[in-house]
Image (tube, rainbow, N blue to C red; front, side):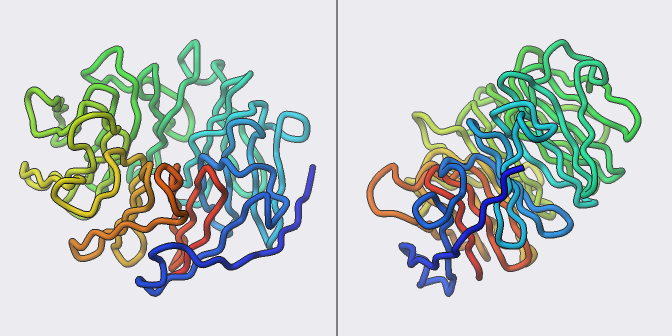
Length: 317
C-alpha cells in the first residue's frame, strides 16, 4: 500500500475572498497526490476523504496523507472509481470498473465486494447511489435501479425502460427522484410519475443531478443547447435558474449538495454555485474559460471538498 505525504498549500482563488471563505488546493505541483483529475469525493464517519479517479483507482486522504488503493494492493480491482457515496452510518459505497465492474462497501474496518453473483444483473452499471430512511441502499445506471436491503439485492421496478440513470435522491418521506438521460421520474404517495420536456417544465431532457431539501426538489440539467442550469420543483410549481435569468455560470449542473446550514452547493462545468437565501453566486478557481470544471462536491461541517480536473480543493467557510 503506497502512502503519500502532502504539504498543504494555501492559495487565493478567484471570487473567494468576497464570501469570507478560504481555500487550499491539493495537486501534483504542491503535493504528491497521484493525479489531478479527481472525479469523486466523499467523507466517511471518521472524517476520512475518499477520492475517485478514472485511471488510478481509489485515493484515501487521512491525517494529511494520501493512500492509493488499486488492483495491485487492495480489493479495488478497477482503475475507474465512480461514483462514491457515504450512507447515514458513515459507510463508504463505490463502484469500480475497468477492467472489472463491481460494487464495494467499506465500514471503516473491512471491505465487502458485491459482484453479479449477489446483484441480479449481467453487468453492474452504477452512476448514482442513494439511501432511504430505513437504511436500504440503491444504485442506478444503464441497467436500471437496484436495492440492497442489508441482506439481498433486488431490481426496482420503475416505469421507464431502456434509460440510463444519472442521479438519485430519496427524502425522509420516502419520495424518490431519479434523473435520467431522457427526463425525470418521481415516486410519491405510492405512484410513479414521469416528467419529460414535452409534458412538463423540464428545461432539458438530460437530468444529471437531483437533491431534496425540505419540501423542494432541486434538479440539475445535463448541459448542451437550451437554458439548462437548474430548476426547483415545490408543490407542483417550477422555478428555473439559468444563464439568462441569474448568475448561474453554466448550463450543466452535475452535482448538488446541502451543507449543515442549508446552503446549496452545485458543481458545474464552469465553477461552483453557492445558493443561500435564494441568492446565487458563482465561485471560480482559475482564470480563463473552461478552466473551472467541477466534478463532485462533499460537505463536512463548515468545510466543502471539491473534486476538479485540476486537483482537490478544500474550502472553509
